[in-house]
Length: 309
Image (tube, rainbow, N blue to C red; front, side):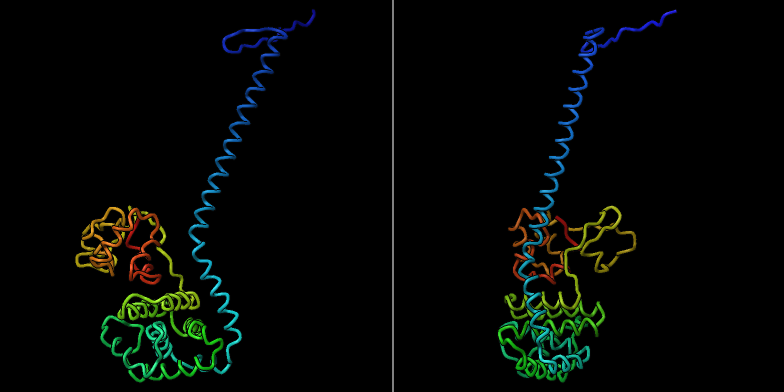
């Protein structure tokens, strides 16, 4: 009994075909499917490249402003290796209080282009701040720190970078002798001390940044959190009355939608700074707050976990 063969059939767009025509239709369908698949793959590749380009652009935008800071730190490291060994040994012998007083004096006095004398004026300003915990209260410590700083500065070359080199050295020694919480508090208190006399100078901004970098303090805006599971607010973060007694946390303050009165709930934000924040809108990155007079790197880090954009 002979074998029977079924004729090849195909149906495309409702048209039934047999034999050679069916084979041609199947070939056309396969080619069409391959073209569609290739186009889809190409679109996926293009989309991936676009997303990568956007991410790269955002990364460059976020980090390009840090290049001068990176270059300055690299230069300071080279200069730091050439420092007189006697200067390094002298600062290494200072205790935590003297290191703290020296950094505060450098920022408050050298940072404004003034010469250190006896440190008493700076000490008086510190003694008026009851809430400060990192800076010492002894006038003798400030007097010794002022004398030691001037002696060290005279031995550091080049003269035009002596202030910055000594800040880097102070920060490195502080990283060994001061625990992290005190180093962070010292940075904030030195910043507040600088602001007592008015807006920071460029040199003061640089000194604060150098200390943060060389003292191993990572000053950056807080990472995003799930507002539903980890709310935060100016009041609840600072232990406001009633917190933990059933009050519902209000969450972070939105810099783009909050009123001037609501913005003043942020630490260190008064009416003038609140109005300046409103003038910045639309705010796309928390770092834009540094454009407001009186808000620098250290103060931004203190308030960043209580705001959002």
